Amino acid sequence: MSGKKSRQKGHNFEREIANWFREYYPDAKRNLEYQEGMGVDIANTGEFSIQCKVGSSFSIQSALKEAVKDGKHPLAVTKRSREKVIVSMYLEDFKKLLIKYLER
Image 1 (cartoon, rainbow, N blue to C red):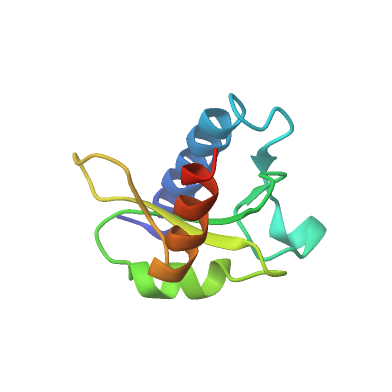
Image 2 (image 1 turned 135 degrees about the vertical axis):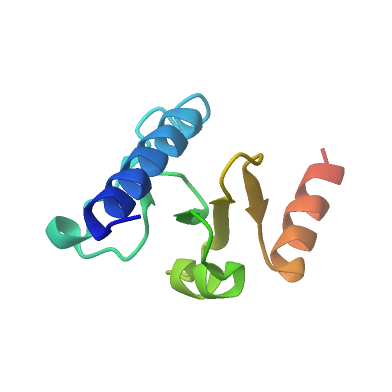
């Protein structure tokens, strides 16, 4: 895939994920890094810092490292061609969320 098509595929995936998160965070939107300099792909998602990757060659670990921001829970939202979307996070962050959930 050419560089332009690959970037477009990534942008479309970011829009799709931002739209999905809007159900839970109405102000969620695709972050345009060159404008805001935040370093995450989806902005306004509460306690989550989200990095999106789509295609055939990406590292979930690298995506999580990119998502580490301001003490938020980093999430890597990834999708390989013709497969389901996967959300990955560090175990210690999952534990914190699980404890909050179980305390309800």
